[in-house]
Image 1 (tube, rainbow, N blue to C red):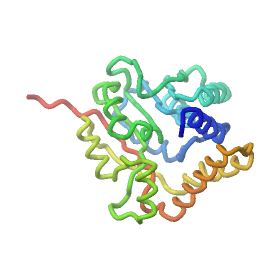
Image 2 (cartoon, rainbow, N blue to C red; image 1 turned 45 degrees about the vertical axis):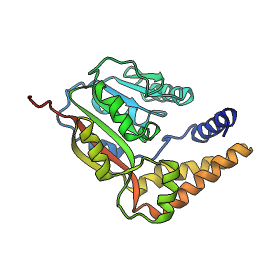
Image 3 (cartoon, rainbow, N blue to C red; image 1 turned 135 degrees about the horizontal axis):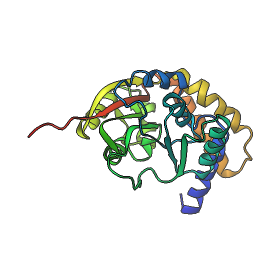
Image 4 (cartoon, rainbow, N blue to C red; image 1 turned 90 degrees about the vertical axis):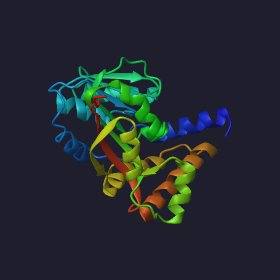
Length: 255
């Protein structure tokens, strides 16, 4: 795929997701349950939401903590959607939307108490995301990162073949826990996102949106690939999906 075609592809993929509440699988009640168990954070934590999309998580974080959330996404379209949604929700005074590359954040060390990222770490690879984001957290800071993961070591061949091409570094839950430990994190908990959250909150709205797209060769490609992803998940959702890794900066051991 040449640069011009790749740009068209990204534009079509972005357009497909415009106006959707979520740009990927997730669920507010599921996330809220995780937040309710983060007991070690300050009363007014410093929060960043990386790969925020149009702000489903950023708005939830701002409402939950009544604290400022710096929300970052590379898409200016999604950032504009977040700005509008924050104002509509009466939370614009707590949301700082930033259009930027989450791999190149020039922020001070230890700037945040809570780093949240749903479905975005795969753009960097889980290991690289942990490496880049760990320095942004304060002592005892917490990262909640959802990551595509294998639930088993013996997934069916069609799923393995698909994801080896789509996301070659995709690891199992055990492998990702090891990656986190090696990146100076302690594991507080892991939570598998239920398959229903994929369908009700993401795939079904996405499918409706497909029928509204202007058909071009690029949009046909995007739709075909999205439908393939849906069919695969429908068959094999017991073997892979998103896991929310709740991580805390490990305490430094005395030498």
